[in-house]
Picture 1 (cartoon, rainbow, N blue to C red):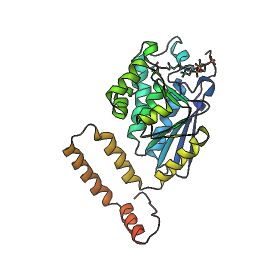
Picture 2: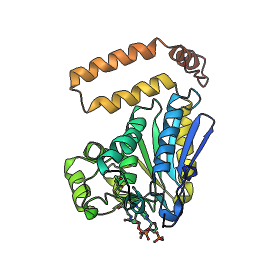
Picture 3: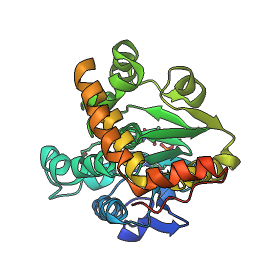
Length: 266
Ligand code: T3D
């Protein structure tokens, strides 16, 4: 393969420490553009972390000056490259589902440009923190493609249909400052502080009761598909389950004893 970097599964770096799983897309010479081995490694890492009792929050970020430039376009031009629908069905869509279905919140720490499916992956995450130089580009239109990897579903939910239409159809880069203004990200921090900020947020989540956090994520994910009555009912069911947990008893005890709770995930 010609191009800035030979793709391997090692282009995805995985680390778990103190209840936080960090997945770094690491092929910086190609702006972390996604190859088949990377997509397979990313999916495997997400699934492994999702199933782990040890991991209570997940951070997805990129090495170098980009978060992720989407599909590796050189790989796509190789003879024998799978048809687009197949590539989406067997590789991209399972990654999006793994992010949405993981019980742990997934934080996108968007260090630089997030383009094409790279932007879609960031949109699929539960929380987005951006570094000041970051940007989001739905680069699909200028390739004669449609947004994929869930962007047509996530983006209108995040920023509303009017803004989503501009971003998706015109494809102009959304700067980190604009992303904050329109609610596409919840924080923008100096580039040097991004990893620490994401780790700190993930660390705070890791200290919460994992069952209640997972249920909160699920309720939020399902919110736009419910009417108010269904949402109220789903909250009552979720609250009953959370309230029956040992973690809730620990939370109450910690409050009364004026100490920090120690949630065991039970
Ligand atoms: O299988 C399927 O195809 C289905 C799924 C499709 C989903 C998609 O993601 S389609 C959209 C694919 N992505 C893009 O169209 C983005 C392409 N990249 C860019 O538009 C620009 O690179 C950026 C706006 C992201 C950044 O621009 P800039 O000027 O900061 O950097 P650059 O010089 O363009 O890129 C630096 C290097 O990264 C360069 O390599 P070189 O010339 O130094 O050897 C460039 O070729 C490489 N690179 C960037 N993006 C990709 C890439 N190489 C392969 N694929 C890329 N997507």
